[in-house]
Image (cartoon, rainbow over all chains, first blue to last red):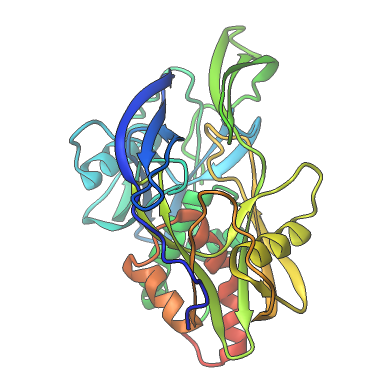
Length: 193
Length: 193
């Protein structure tokens, strides 16, 4: 049932230049050639490293959350732990590292829940989501300079309520919770969350 | 159950400067003062306009999707329609406009499903999600230059399967589908989607 009269073409990437550098991302200018029209055009792309976010579940069914002041929105945000992956780092290893450093929690079994592109239109990186089972507060906190984090472990049902009523506004955190939802539903039994 | 020993402070915004301008966002340098430590530091923020994405449901239970080449990921992406809001524009009006222009679909009742912050850490804007009920292909397409869009309406259950198996990778599109899920579940009956 396709109404679109024009099938989208794959533009050809001719080259890219760094237009602006920051500590957390580069802004690239990518020059593309349209294969049919023959036109060249530059498109702007935000290029950060890949990110990882962690759904850490405790033995008593709580999800580990962090509350931080966030400079992007000039306000506080309730999130799951996460951060920037190092080059070549495995997402699960990165997730366990960020969980430990930010919250002092360490876990048992860990696995990749899935990955998304934060914004395919103008951003190049991926965000990976890791599930850590049997998480417990056992490690020392290792905050980066300027990190001030309130760590709180809330019952998972309460976290899903916050996700649906505006208490959690971070789009990528909501992605992680969506990907974890079937697993949580299977564990808790019953139908809706 | 809080383990964090340091409650996060609200940094004070002293001022901001545009560090880099592009067609779709500015990069800002925001200077913040820490209220306790008295330190000043600049943080980088991506500042686009607000965005809107639309879950448009047809009378026969299909969700309207668009497939486009996306320069951020240098590849194709299957998404719901959406775009950039104009200054002062109402999210529902903006969603209906983007739906009509991109896909030629118009709808009956429309309402706001919710909103997220795409990335509170480094990005200032919000993305709003609009539900359009009873959408039908009735309008003329009005693509921007460089827009080439394949429009396809898939059964909602199929869309949710794509959302869970990696067929849809756009984080904000997945947010919209999560927010629409209770409504869809109530309409289709049954328990899981």
